[in-house]
Length: 389
Image (cartoon, rainbow, N blue to C red; front, side, top):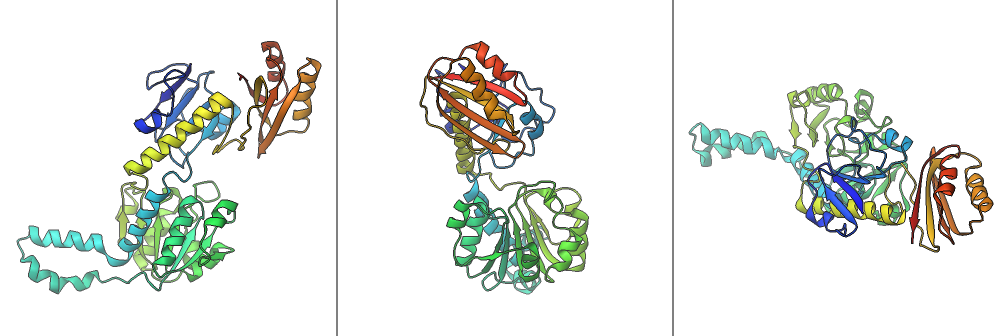
């Protein structure tokens, strides 16, 4: 029986993926094998020795201590693409909000009514202060062409926009999904210099943190409108406030409000609604539960942020799942031990991701704990699991 701990409310559709005869799921479970989480902060979480995997029902994993998980041999999953449609729809909404001063106009109308004015008369006189441009015929720059960015870029072309997309790590699947009408930008400068609107769809990393700063804004067109539905830390708040004050940035729509940025004029703040739809929450929960289930039962890894993708069909009596450092001689050491103990390898796959590697070995006989312990003692090995078919 696998023990799964939930740190947030998880959609019942996701929990139903976990067979109750094989999985015990609760927020109170102890010595958990796996964790399902959404937004709970895990940086101070004490990992039990039993913990093998964490599945985040969402794309971002800033709330999870990835390095600490890797060193403990804990696989961290996310759910890329599961919330893509929800964020795409909000991005379209943000484009219009940035252009037409809709929120400011709606607030003004309510204020007039609250003051006792004849709304039907005053709106005709006052509406000119909320005039804004159409998006058709304008140029949109999409920074990040993952599951969300590709959808935003594609639909923007259908709205009559000229679209530039930038992503130095464009995947094959994303490239195949990208409309031919989207122009590939080979650098950010192309986006900054040519686009009337810029929308961010990249993860927050040390390289991307504060990427929209004074230098970047200086390269942009006057009156540019910037949308940030990705992560708050991508934008330097002080530099953005200064640009809004001068009009260099005509509007800033963010899904990550804070007290500082709300001081700026023409800031449209959304309360982190990007993936807040019933459909998105259900999709993320189902994908996260499926990833967790497949890893715990079969050792397969897909959509991990700290370990490589490795999916292998069963071909033996037992399976060794080994998380180790990506160092020379690791595979030879593993197979050498198996050969010494007379274990026949039926199939083996090894994949690496930066400093870490994952090896799955299907063997033709049961694996004793003595053999597993020998492998655990090898240099650079973090975790060894034995699964029986």
